[in-house]
Image (tube, rainbow, N blue to C red; front, top):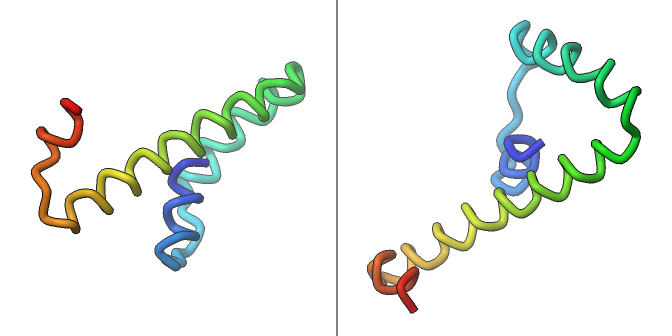
Length: 71
């Protein structure tokens, strides 16, 4: 999900790869068993993607990442 968020943000569109399909199929049964898992996974993926985008924005400002993270 995180990769999907980042691809949507950057407007990257890729063809579906077989390994992606197989990976998602492996999660389908687990998601059907635990309906709350999709919310949990989506929240974590969104936070991870947001963190990556924030780090990218900070590095684009010319400030060293080490200084920003220590603050």
